[in-house]
Image (cartoon, rainbow over all chains, first blue to last red; front, side, top):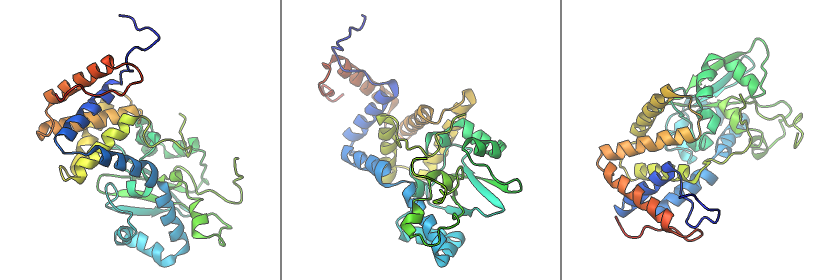
Length: 209
Length: 110
């Protein structure tokens, strides 16, 4: 029967949405999940865990040489102390950009990503296009993100796995010596920690530009 | 190719993406499976789906996620395929029989 425009019944959710409702109903009835706990998990990952966590670590690395050394040599004990540890962030490796090398992270298998430090990955990180091309033609991908590197600079691509997650430490912009940790953290974007951007330059980036 | 860059985007573009994600995390937290076991299975589904078509990283990603979770729970006996199918049918009927604007609930436990 054709649908009239008054929508006499409720809008029917998509097939996967209905399958998820079925799962939730069954697991709730069995006492295996609690709907309010699900809401808390969603709130946590949507609002509280995100790239601001990674940005704080990078800013601290820029300012504090002994913290920097810990993060490069053996980051996990300190990250655990900071509460930046858990699912999909068990084994972090920090890879540092220098004048000679630019680092970039991909997961060619699926979408391994350091959740405790960066939150949930953006859609493009999970796309086949990025996953295939980041390895094959990283410079072309970087150019599409608006990153152009000096001729002689090497690009190193790191393939995150279920075991090891990489996070790029972008180069600290020049002229930021006087900035506080929070001010520095504001320059460290999500993409700069994936390696598809540089840290923002406070001298050249006009607000809203 | 257009990349989204640093433009803010919601972590989950549709409510069911968030829901299936949270269910998986909750089951892991309750000890029903190790996260590494989950990641391995999810990676395998993702790879298999990617052979058939170019995955877009959005809906495709969470479709693969849901497919993996359903298979995993069926295998471990936590959620039988038939029971899920019945519940899905019950939810479909509930949506189709509830007047627009009213909360949709299952009539009775299935």
